[in-house]
Length: 118
Image (tube, rainbow, N blue to C red; front, side, top):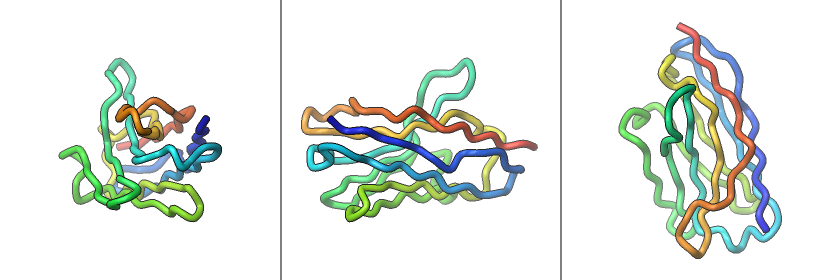
């Protein structure tokens, strides 16, 4: 099994920055990619960004491109999301997820709240 623990959420003013971390433990060799998702109140969970561990290729949703940067430290089995120029629309619970050999994101962290005030 793989376990994921997020940290780094909080309250910030618009234009500010936060860095989220996600630490993976357990059978981490089974993880091919890791990603960040978010869910705002009353909305469905949406993809934010992901990183492929083998190729280090990254992808982002359009609304965060140029503001958010995903990175990973293989040695520490930790993934990060640097969020700059935060907007009130970024307010959500952010979830870390792992994609394994079945191709699906099927391991999830508990989530961390990010609140951006205007």
